[in-house]
Length: 168
Image (cartoon, rainbow, N blue to C red; front, side):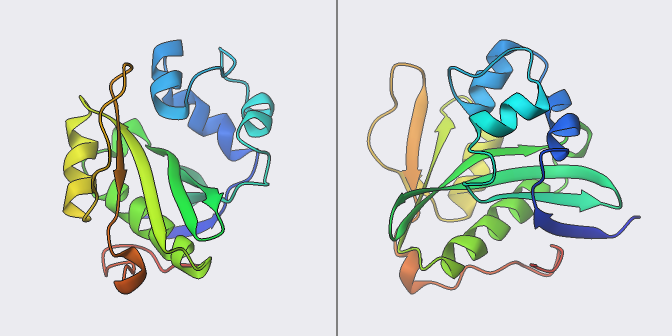
């Protein structure tokens, strides 16, 4: 198996990652409303914040297998966003690795509050987020999005586990 490594996401990563999204509806569910369809990597990079918002790619050898962003909401509040795992790699623990990596990155940025949003019918994601300690915060909106937060984040030790590549 090729070596897994985290790195800051690059615009070129989106050439592969955009291919994981197969419809305008899937794009909206993954990345939010108002994005251009079909997803062009350079356009997505700009719409995502073009490097101004921390983004990370997990690579196996030369191939991206997971992607996610941290969006600053306040000085000590970070939001996990645009989490995605390659379709052929789902169900193999990479989503957990992705979340754990983002939590480490949030801690490095002195986060005291970490949030995310998930569609209420995305049972795999809900199960993962609940296993990581996230709980609902507020009600599900008209689009079916459930906001969640990780209580006591600042007082806990969220680090990568032994199944995940080294943080770097």
